[in-house]
Image 1: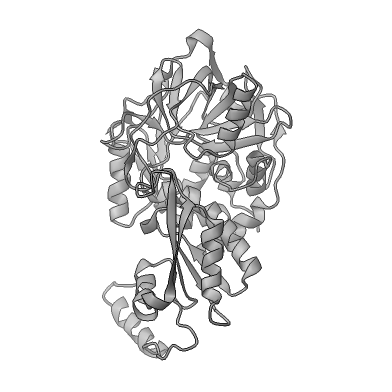
Image 2: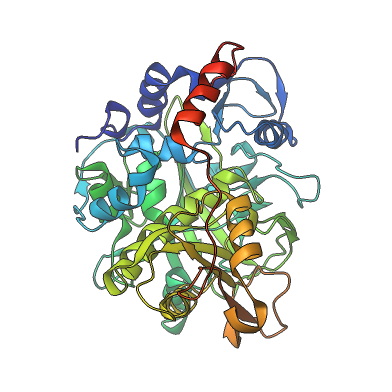
Length: 463
């Protein structure tokens, strides 16, 4: 399926303009003055309380010299539109494109090279940042997408790391995931070197989604971005270390991370909904700032916001759905609810025999290192609705029979309930009916429902 116009560009500005033209009711443009201190977060919070998740464009944020875009990933409908599908087809569309990577294309020039500041001229006090929560240590870059390249293969790793101002030319950041970037940093330290990196702040949403992909070391997320875009990602070389970065990025900070350098960082409002001071306290020394002349600050709403969670969970859901269905054809759908941050997962299936739901739950809890509680329900339960999953648990689940717990497994470093050694326990809940279930679900006939809808339509109460 062909991507819509706003997904066939690599420029965030072009994306935002084309999306606003196509779906103006899903974009909120604010021209009144806002404060750099929590106002954008407060707006997103209040909109979410009304079950509204528009793309937010703030043209006048006091203390920020550029316009601010945020809440891009807060809506699953908007994510589905990126791929030209309905929400039900989002997982398949993402995985199909992610599984067809296209290597990046090196170009000589790009908008991000329009303004370049290097060396002593670097002053990070000029870099726009927002304060997201009253409990944050200060303003943060939440859309800090760090790129590092394997010096032997040239293959890059892209990953997100919260970052705050430490000095004129240094950011304090956390590599709390201890993933591939951490591995590359330790390899550099073993050679007695600092690790060259580039921090991208603001790019096309498809590039952001690619950076969230869960892929093995040696798989270049820039190629996954190409697969999602359906075209090679245009990249330019940074001036100091030649790291290939998106040519249409808003800002790029080029520099190094020295494994021996430390700086206090945090607390920061994390995806758990808690303010976290857990951090590796690394330091990014910035040698050059690259930016577009008309740069925007593309922010990611922090905390347990729908945007923060969606950006990470869409690739996880897509990957887990593909893996589970390949092994267990009975699996129909998978959902990571906002209410469970990254720690809960719901799976629906049409079990062919008793025990199959438990087998699916074991696979899910073993494959996904973040999930602590997995709930299996029948295919007629809408797993995108917490109330329906809770109803299934209330009416199908017997704790003595349908629950199991596995202890002593590695968990998320940001889980405030995890043990001191970082381990956690995981729980599987089988809320399917099973072959011995005796009950007929109460239902209303289609004709009666149609009559009710017609009556309500007269009062302007259409669904």
